[in-house]
Length: 297
Image (cartoon, rainbow, N blue to C red):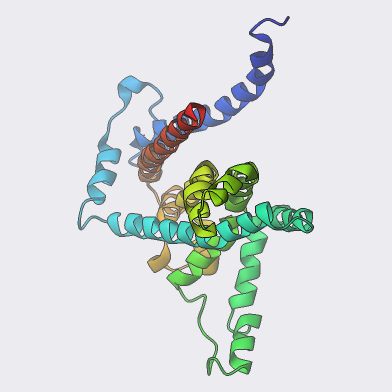
């Protein structure tokens, strides 16, 4: 009854808007990364024509990622922080999402509201709350000192990697739980009951039925938090502000706002984007394979 182009036409304005807001800024970054620097003003001179591009800045950054390079430590540190934070989100978030989807029948609405509440508060304000809690005279140190766990206030904010990791987990875990909950909630309970009827224990039913069927939600939540974590720079700045805990996002921010070489910052952005495209490609391939497996059942 309707032409084939009707429903895609409804999505066209939104898709075009998103593409413009992504492609134009990204092309500006590419122009800066493949451009030059004014020798007098030390400002970036973008190369808008692809014929004028040169790879000097990108090659310089890639050489800095080699063993002993200037960017290797911060890149490895960022990967470590992101992987540990992702593991923390999985260990904390999966039981929460599983409980809400399977066992919180009466309190499910309340639990979902509590998960959505952090989105009402600015991420910056939530991180500043951590500063107040973990400061030498904050509530955490007061409780630890008063209960004689420690004899004097602990320097949580003195460039501790653990503080940055816990702040990342706290800041991004709601984005992980919600898609995982949606995936777990869509699993047909009769499938799990069939596994139990066939003699599987609760643990084996979870391991061989629930966990594989929730893989798409698990990967989706991981992508939602891993991609912004790699570019995060304000969390380490707020809870640590030490060079020993800086991440790739801090380096990009430094070159764009604190240094005379925005071309280096743009080149780091290009390389980071290429690295994230590989992760996104793996996610899309996994989703496609899982969809084919579900259709074959």
